Length: 161
Image (cartoon, rainbow, N blue to C red; front, side, top):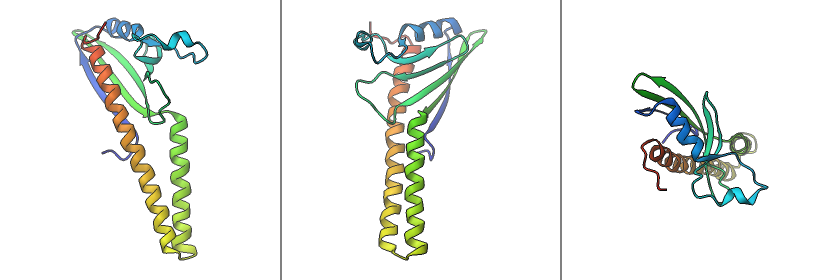
């Protein structure tokens, strides 16, 4: 298990850069939460934007998920296909709240251990901080695996039409 909510991978594909981006464009929609018609399309697998230089996408979900990864990608052309560089990371709001609560609980831990010598409360704050961070990392890695599976199926022509 990694210590930071971040994952990278490099994929080599026999598809050209245009084919990879074309497949992504077909299954990616820009998010419009006010338009209910965009939510029912089962062919849309990702929300986000795909451009000629790269893409910013996330897996389509039915309900909100704090630990859903943002997938940042670049596709480079090669003579025999393409190389896809992927970075999975938390959305900025999720990073803020994870850092905020980690800092607050660490500060309370130091306060209880070092200043007022309440070791039981300090241990509780430490356990809560470690538990919060551990659960965040577990749920992030679980969502990365799900997003990777969908992306790999897309690149390997295993889409169900």
